[in-house]
Amino acid sequence: MTGKERYEQINIPSGLSGVIQQARQRARNQKRRKMMIWRSSSLVAACAAVMITANVPGVAKALSDVPVIGSVVKILQVGGGGERTDGVSVTTTKESDTLNINFQIDGEQITSAPSYTVDHKEGPNRLIFTFNGVRHLEYDKLEKDIKALKNVKDVYQNIILDDSAIGFVVELKDDVDYSVSEYQQPGYIQLKLSSDGKSTQAHELFFVRSEDMEQGEALAMLAEQYSADGSSVVQTQNGKFTVVMGAFENRADAEKHLKEFTDREDYSEPLHVDSWMSNENPQ
Image (cartoon, rainbow, N blue to C red; front, side, top):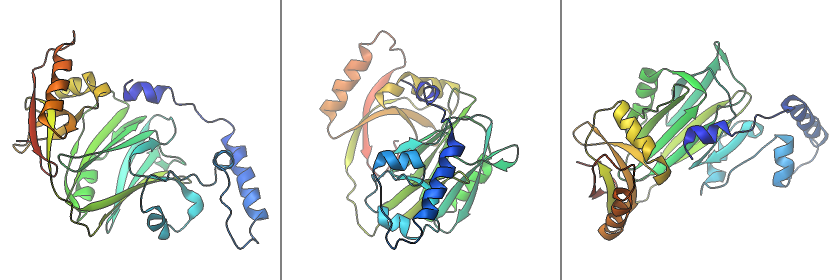
């Protein structure tokens, strides 16, 4: 299933206003209590008060400097969230090691983030952001803000064959930790980067990849063709781009997957097995 198909299947919330009012009333009734009680996941979802995806090792650390806990919807490293919408414009603001990705419609910031996904891959160490229901991105501003973050190595667009979706890739320096937080009221995404103080040993990885290509429609079509196989676009050391699949620990596994691709009826673009270090770009 493609990202667009997953987006189109997202259920649009109904009765959200009433749910929020109920949550506020419960909060007032419990204000005198000294300890916050974390309710069951179903009740949290119904109240729309706080829902945290705890797939981040340092969730407590990430929350420690969040000024209003009630505005947090999710904290994650990979995954997605947001709500189905359309006609959104994306802008960014930067503060120290933090990037805020803001969303507007007709100049007004919206209450919830649009549907989005965040993926993390090695070779090189990178984050892949995709937003659906978005019609405009101030990319020059986004690129400037992201490159100003001290733990970022590079950033580039990820062309998507859908005029209501945008994507970009953030390449991280070595030994960088990160968290992605989703907020509502207003809706925005916050990317936090920090040096984790640990030295990670770079290691060789094996990929099935395409030839070098210029950024454009042909590259996007090839990436979409193999999207179900976990394809992603990576910038090469010569400034061009390639579509890659896998991050195998040995050449034999990569060769096996290449054989599966070449046996398909829709196989046309020549693919081959290549390897490079987990913290480097392909040649």
